[in-house]
Structure formats: structure tokens, C-alpha cells
Length: 440
Image (cartoon, rainbow, N blue to C red; front, side, top):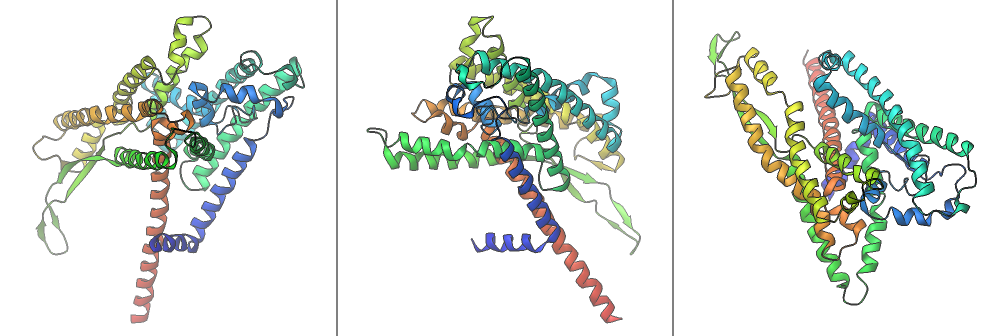
């Protein structure tokens, strides 16, 4: 505990880090405030039916990602999800579109152009999703006529503009956090939205366990212990790596004119190199039954996120997308060429193609258990529900929510630690310089 307090003191002493943290917290607070602002023309006291409709199922998951803004008919109802969709589309197009492939190789200038393309695509997706959202809450959520204070073209046009502006504003907040704050802004906004549902979900579970025969406080303690174990397993999945030993050629040190043994280093290949992206890909596909359910009633069975077939298909998609995303994001050929140019090699394998094949083989072997573990965590909430846990609380036992929270927390902590290490290193360098001056 004392170490934690001392770390907080160290953070507060570093002016730059303190400013970044305060800016990050301030922008997150703005995002949460905007998520509570309802669309003009909607009576927020008449949204009970909308909240009931989004209490579970796929719509409940979408509502969790927006921090409850979806169920509040907020100007941030679409949240940052259109930007995530646009990012996924651009990444997939980068495989087949030569222009995007060229931009990916152009360094910082190419990255800026890709970001600009993603922004424009986000606007296009938002302009499609905004009228869909308005149509759904008007016709399919059972809202009373009194909930809509304004109707007709005025309501539609104003709502589409505000929903689009809300998403663009959320995108801007996320980018500002990434550039000027601490952590990945987009991921932080999603994480904050998920965490915002935590208190209500826990209280709901606590109340449900107070009924006769539900287990009471003892059952809550057991659930918390299981939850803690699941978090530990998720941390292991996020941080686990397979270290591939790399040897660098012997070289002659000029200072004392003698041979120096080549340094041995490692290439860290992550067990879950694709991160949370396979879940997001799979989840995007599993949202299709909602859109097609009216036309094809047979697909309605796939809208139950606790159903058998939903989870079987969901798990298989995660495993497939884990291999797919790992293959397009981990360039083993480039890694092998970079090693060859720097006089490095994997012991027992020739530089170049043989090394690339070895790295690809290792990556394929570790991706299998990693993807199965990821799929198991993703469907764990559906299993937990069968043991009497409420749906909202079960979402924190795995799936996209928990993996995103753990991944973002680890990434943010690593960034803060790097600031602390750099500050101490700078302090040592300054001390060394002052000592040299005193010696002179």
C-alpha cells in the first residue's frame, strides 16, 4: 500500500505527467457529461421502455459500450463505435487496396492520411447508423407517443445532425487524449463507458442475492473470488509472450581492439497478438441477426447472447479472426529481413526465408491456444448466467468488456511507468552532469 501511495506522489511531482493525467480526466468527464444529454425533442422521463429493451442481449452489449448513452437516447448514443467500425474497414481494405498499402509504408505522412480517411469513413458510417437508430427507437422499442415532443422531418434532421456531431466529438476527444494525455483515447472512452455500468450491475446482483434461497452475502463473496480469478487469467492472456532467442554476430570493439561475443536478445511473440480485435470483428458479424431478424425470422434465435448456437458461432468466429488478424498485423517476412540486415539470426535457422518460416510456424502454434483461451473468456458470461448471475453483472466476467478493461489498464499503467522511469533517468543524468562540473 505504501508503494502505491509513493507512486502516486511520484506521479504528482512530475509536472508533465500530472498535466497529462488531469487533461485525460477532464476530457473523460466531458464525454460522460455529454452521454447524459438527451436528443432535443425526446422526453427523458419516458424512456423506460427503451432502457428495458437494452437491459440484455446484443443491444445491452451495445448500450454497455456507450456507457448507457444508447438507452438514454443521448446525443452520444452511437458513441465511438462508428469510428471503431471505420478503423476495422480501413485495416481490412489495407490488405487489398494498393493505395492504402502504399500509405502504410510511408511512415508518419502515410499514417496521417490513413487517419484522415478513417475520419471521413466514420462520418459516412454515422450518417447511415443515425437514421437507423432513430427508426429503431421510434418503431421497435415500444416508446409511448408522449416520449417524442417533436416529430416529422424536423426531429429526424436535427437528430441525425446531433448524433453525427456527437460521434465526431467523441472521436475528437479520443484523439486529443491520445495526443496530449495518457493512454489510447479511443480505448479509454470505451473502457469508461463500460465501467460506468459497473456500480448499477453490482447493486442489481447484490439485491438479487438477498432473496430467499439465492445465497446472500456468501454467494456474492464467491462470485467476487471467481471474478478476481478471471481477471488474473485475462491479465495472463494479455501479457503472455513466447520469447524467440536471437543471436547477433560477433563484432570487434574499437576501444580495446578485441572480439566481443554477440549479444543475445529475444523477439517477443504475444500469445494473443490480435488483442481484442477478433472479438470486435466477431461481434460486428453477430449484430447482423438484429438487422435481418424481421426479414428472416429464423435468425432471431441468434439474438440471444446466452443461447447455445450464438456462443458456438461466436467462439468459432473469434478463433478464425484471431488467425486472420494475426496474419495481417505480424509481418514475419519483414521481421526476418530486419534481423538479416542487422546481422541477427535465430540460432539453428538461416537468415531470410527460413527464419521467416520458423517465426510464422511459432506464431501459428501459439495463436491456437491463445485464440481458444480468448474464445473461452468471450463466452464465459453466457456460462456464468446459467448459475444464476444477473446478465449485467455477468458481462464483467469475461467477453469484450473485461478484456478491453484489462488491456487498456495495462497499456495505461505501462505509459505511466515509462514517464516515471524517464524522469528518474533524467534526474540521474542531471546529477551526473552537475558532478562533472564540480569535478572540473
